[in-house]
Every structure is written in structure tokens, then in C-alpha cells.
Amino acid sequence: MSLHKTCRFCKIIIGEYFYEGVDEPFATNDEFVAIASVGALVEGWTLIVPKAHDLSMKNNYSNPVLSDFLDSVLPPLNRRYGPLIAFEHGANAEDSDTACGTAHAHLHIVPFGGTLLPDLQESEMKWINCRASEISLMAGEHEYLFYIELGLVESWSDPFGHLHILKKPKSQFFRYLVAKRSGLSDDYDYRNFPRLNTSRQTRSVLANSF
Image (tube, rainbow, N blue to C red; front, side, top):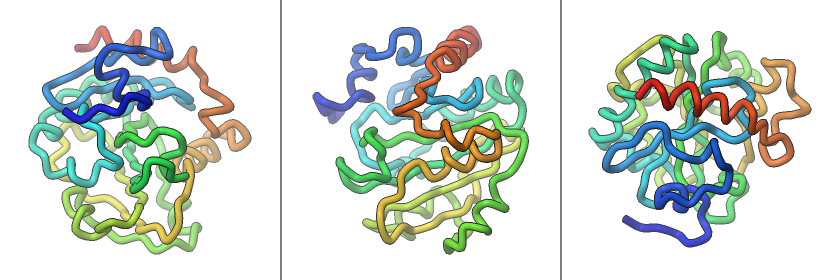
């Protein structure tokens, strides 16, 4: 397993926590952990993180171990919080703005009773319908954005989503859209608004579900 000494997520994997009560995984298997997201705009905001250091999730989506892990994580999230969306800001460099200071692959799973599809359409960006497992081939070495509406599904099973291949890095794109839909547009940046109380509540609730 590849670890980077300066990577916060790599430190979480080996049990070194920067945010006490937030960083400790509430679910884990041999290759992935689930943690509460810092800067959560809603309770239940979860990150799925590979234990091996990588820059994006694209090479993980075809991994059956990821599918098995998500199949264990999604049902408790559904039961507690309702419909879910998922998204990734797929970086390709340690210092990319797309990674926004967290250059370690992670998938956001967010309780959200609405849809971001109108926002994607209004963005005038080109979105391609594809399965998660197809991102590696379709994006190649480019950075990307990927969005999925999971609803109340309890099985990952390589879902279809919406892929945008970036021409230049883009920071916190989906986080801003969720904030806008939630009336929190000015507070979307997790670095300035870490919302640790919400993150701690998420971890406390979900730790009792596994």
C-alpha cells in the first residue's frame, strides 16, 4: 500500500487524525475506508477513500472490492438520511486545484433530496453519460468531474452517471452546487467553513451503524 507522508488521508489510514472525532473511519475493509467529510453542508456527508494513495477514483470503479464496500455503506446511509447523490472531483496532479488541497482519491456520498442535473445543464459544460467503470477509458489522463444520482439504491452495481472531462482544473464544483441548492452559496469552501460539529455528528451516528 502506497502512503504519502504529507497526505491527510494517508495519515488517517494509519491512525493519525488531524480532526479528532471526525477523521476516524466509521467503516472499513481491506482496501477502502468511509469517513465523515470535513465541511459537510448536511449531516451524513461521507467520503469513500482508497487506502492506497491515488489521485482519482477512476481506476477503482471497476474494483469489485469497492462495489462490495459500497453495498455495505449505502443501506445505513439510506435508512438514516434518505436519497443520496455521489460525485467526484477527479484530479490528476498532487497540486491540482481540482484536488483542492486533498490530493488523495475520494468519492463523495451526500444525502440530498433533490437533483443537481439542472445545474449541470445550465453550466454549459459538456456532460457524457457513462458508467463509473468507463471513466478510466473515457477520461484517460485528463482531470474530470463525475456525478451520480443514487436515490435510495442499496447496491452500487457500476451505476450510470454524468462525466465532464476538464480542460483545466476546477475546484469544489459540486460542493458549490450543493451549497447553492441549500442556500449556503457563500459558505461552500470547506477550508473556510469546516463545519466540524456536523462532521462529528455524522461520524457519531454512522459509527453505530457498522
